[in-house]
Length: 371
Image (cartoon, rainbow, N blue to C red):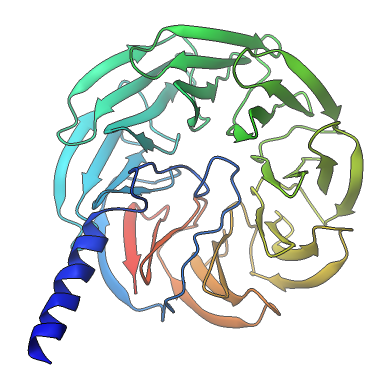
């Protein structure tokens, strides 16, 4: 019995240190399609494991890969931490604030930085082990969009209005799609079945061939799109500044349904089990049927919801801009509040879930780990 327990304990430690996947790939919203589904089965009680100061305020969402946690801060830094203890492993100094959420693949960390006042920014590739700089790319534009991958390419948008595909190995430009001069792209591209989907501040969602950058279709809403699309079951779902949550046919871009909310929808939706979960600046989190947009439930978070929901183990996790700066855990089935955890500032980033723990940051400057 003792030997069996010892073996199980060792296996658990090895699995934790192996990161979120065997490949070590870690992305904003959990996967390339941005479903926000983490496949967890362990329950999280909302008890604090640790918290670490990482800056004055934090917008970047954490990425967890091979036993290391990466997150950017407004103080022009990218941190690498031990997710078990919050211990700092290394820090990289960027040339601007890091609102872009890091992505990890093949032992490299990719992220963007930017200074809107100076209209400058850089896209970085670092060695994930020690933070050593591998290469940079810059066209002089700030970068708020987070990276995504397909094949040997890494994608992101800029505030100058360009969508880039770079070779992940050396940062050379494979293709560029210009949306329009200083039409901001803060949305993070989603990739599914060889097609890239991204929103822009001209109010459009674009579908491009991920390999070539050739436009397949574009769909126009009535206001800017900061929400990052989520793709599942042949559908593309996103929010718009025109206060609606949209669902399009992924192949054609034709409207399937739209659901009005009370204010802007900049939160990026999650999709799991035929249900769409999305936050709105009206303070509600909505659960909608993917098939027809019919409301299953909604929950009021006492403040605008810019944070993008993460779903795992029958629960939904999202932050709010409420005065108490709370992270909410809700039942994915019926929207009941399971618990909430208060911080010292609003929560705008997207939680990351792994093995019975949730990681997120707050405008109080702390990165939190709850269990």
